[in-house]
Length: 375
Image 1: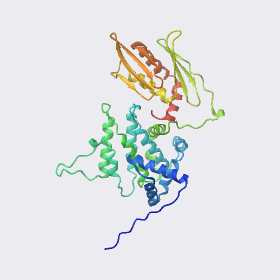
Image 2 (image 1 turned 60 degrees about the horizontal axis):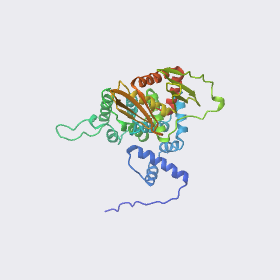
Image 3 (image 1 turned 120 degrees about the horizontal axis):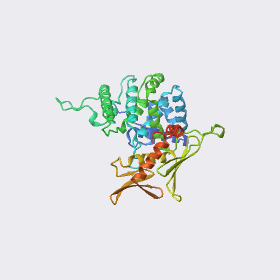
Image 4 (image 1 turned 90 degrees about the horizontal axis):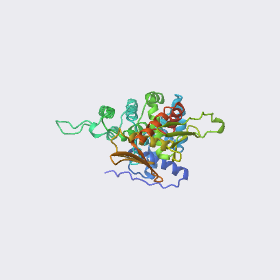
């Protein structure tokens, strides 16, 4: 019997730059399954695959913010994005979908979830040749959306492309139902793996397939970038590039006043002034914090059955006092708490609603959504 070829171990000293490159590659691989993998295993995979496009993805991840800025420029100008650039975009889409915790209570919107499923199906049709990834795709979709076992044999069907398509469409159908609570968060891994590992048609076909889903994919990618690096996708503006922006007038409702202060680029801060000559004033700055405050206001109130809200920045709750309902919010960073009557809470809700009807506020806010994503 012939002897089996022996595995040989090669030990080499690598530079810090190459070590960082391998670490970026390791992080990309871990994102597919969530399972640990060593740097040496990654080096072996890269040597065995010898794929230039995979190495290009690793190199692009060296400066993710800079690369995403360039991807956004090309995407908004309808210029062709390369397969590695689309793979980086899909990686951050996955991070955006999976960014969810007890202190990040707002999952992505139903519309964005559906767009991610549709984008996968669009690219899935561009596969060339045989694939070994169909079972992986199926494993990232809800079990109850997958075809059941054969009634005659009791065996699970062999995973085929048709089964993957049917499962994605069933997942899409259930996610589209407003009464359901479907959040197929792991489905984002499928688009990333599809672009990263499969043989696909050229860049032009990929861009045509993904173009209809660009707005939603970008918001998800920007969300993923923010949760990964805690900063927006934003270019540094020079003083000469800052155009004159008209001041935003304050608005009042039920004795409360909301004032706005412009910042750099699209940034602005708000000041919530309470009624009375010596009443407190509560400042809110930064897109993430203002976003959460608005969501807390919407989640609690007379029209809602929710008893409390817990986010990264605020804790809100309702309390019954002498047959009356009060609403309170507390900044988690300093513990300062404000309690409002039901009428006062409604007034603050209306105040913020009217504030975001201002065209200047909406314009700046839409710009911030492109930088931070769907938070």
